[in-house]
Amino acid sequence: MGLKTKITAEAGKQDLVITREFDLPLDLLFRAYVEPEIVEQWMGTKVLKLESRKHGSWQFETSDPQGNVVFRANGVVHEFVPGQKITRTFEMENTPFPVQLEFLEFEKLTAHTSKLTMQIVYKSVADRDGMLKLPFAQGINMAHNRLQEAVNDLK
Image 1 (cartoon, helix red, strand yellow):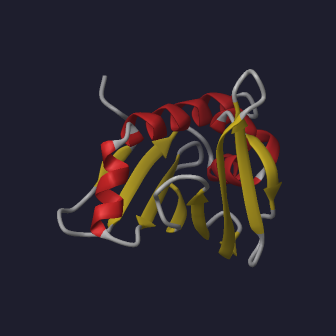
Image 2 (cartoon, one colour; image 1 turned 90 degrees about the vertical axis):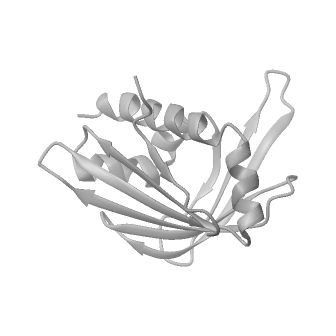
């Protein structure tokens, strides 16, 4: 079975476009990105802060079983339109990757299905290509699969 989350990376460009259709109503898909308890379930990370509003900020952290922090990311919300879009920065701490800009758009397809489109803009083509060398596609697919499963329970 192929990956349900599609990633489009045009040669020579410094952005990615990620799309995924979910068997979830729009309101539940949006909640999966703005409610800390749901984010923690599907991302498998601890939400230290998640201010779902314009000029809000967020911070996530993942630790190993011994309690050592292995991943920390943060950013600022620049635009927030409930049920429609979130524009935010995303910065992974202690990595060579510079901050990126993310445009998330949420779309109702039917009463029971919705679509997420993310455009991620990197500082350079090299930064974008470096991200694609990681198991990025598999990781985002696994996360979106967990999102679908976690939010199914809220239906």
